[in-house]
Length: 146
Image (cartoon, rainbow, N blue to C red):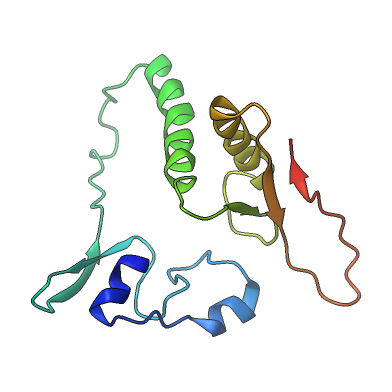
């Protein structure tokens, strides 16, 4: 998002979404005008458009699959790792948000995968974790994974 600052663009946070649950499990993101699953197309001329970055095309019900079971297993393992690898690309420290409902893949699994990717580059790497808590909540959270 920093790349857009030079164009005078300003992020507008969706505070209501954060306040409601601290989790973005519906079709909203942290930005009020950007829907989940969309990307922003911006040209120097000032042209600005959002559109979905995927189009799901399912085979007809009952159609035979084209992948072997082994290929399906490898794909299911590889895709989350690649997504996490991309999320770890940053010019600032990154962390993992541990609170809230809404994810199919448990956060400890995501944290473990992120940690293994970080340790490939640096055996002494640590990964910050964080959560939200409110007065009266009894929550124990790991501060960092090693």
